[in-house]
Length: 77
Image (tube, rainbow, N blue to C red):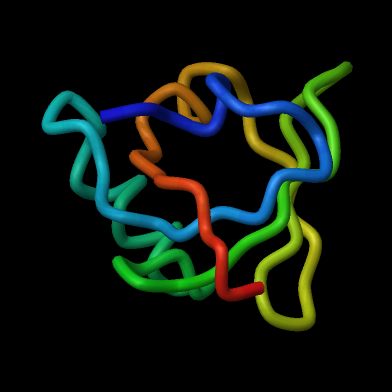
């Protein structure tokens, strides 16, 4: 399944889950910020870090985390 790093900035995406290699504590932090399966997000940028908009927040993610968030393109947003 594709990750955040597979899409261009401006893409409207749905979170589908996390790579199994992502540490459980990081999964918990991401869930606390609203990144759960089915959540719509907008990819804002990849440089210098991956930035996303989720609900009313903007998050900056290191590459290792962005590569572990599984997503698919959303046609509903």
